[in-house]
Length: 270
Ligand SMILES: C[S@@+](CC[C@H](N)C(=O)[O-])C[C@H]1O[C@@H](n2cnc3c(N)ncnc32)[C@H](O)[C@@H]1O
Image 1: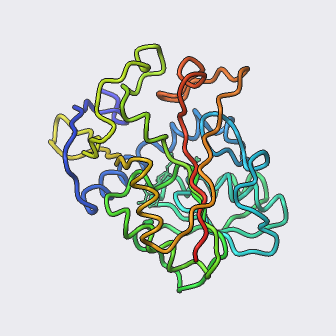
Image 2 (image 1 turned 60 degrees about the horizontal axis):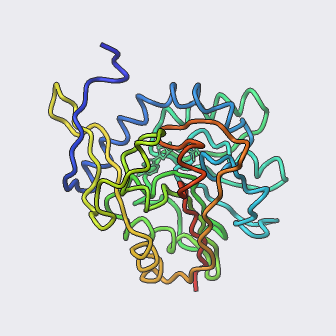
């Protein structure tokens, strides 16, 4: 048996924040080596892509003008995006739940000579004082992995300065209607868009929750942001580039040319 991929069964059921966090920390620690060896070249040691479409901050400019600003990346993995900001002469801190992901960050820091300060912590309990940052962003990190999303967004609002920007990418909520399959089978809706029951993988041998993802609809995200005091500025839905043929999990050209795979919310704190 491959210890990185023990047999799991998939369920849809409620999972609270502590169970969710413990499972995802274990999973990302176990998966980090494979994640970086599979996707590292695509991400670039100092690259900033918003999702599997390969469209980056260079093209979209969703963070706005970051010159001289204090930036926090949440769910930063190996800090590739923050390192890209460093190459632009900017300053960013990476935060991730997985120590193994941050060990990869350190390795890349040493290889490139571009060091991003990192913190091992959870998005639901940011270890920073109020008003510490001007920009907080996340590229597929943390937001869809936390159960207590209201708390995570309130934490971002707390550490942001008034008028600060929050931008984050997640799996496009409409993808939850479809099987997570990169082939045409992944184009046939089979579950309710409105079913918010988390996706859970349970370790067959131990019965322990091994991985969790949480679904919120497009409208849920608007309400969550508004409730925390944010004003929505943009909802970017990057189009799949015609010549892009890379498969990443359920993301592929086959599906990407027809349906959105990534949603990027951009919101400013009032
Ligand atoms: C899909 S990876 C994205 C990493 C990086 N942004 C990238 O593009 O490669 C998701 C990351 O979120 C982190 N993560 C999951 N739950 C988290 C939490 N509660 N707080 C902080 N980070 C979390 C994982 O450890 C993982 O590194």
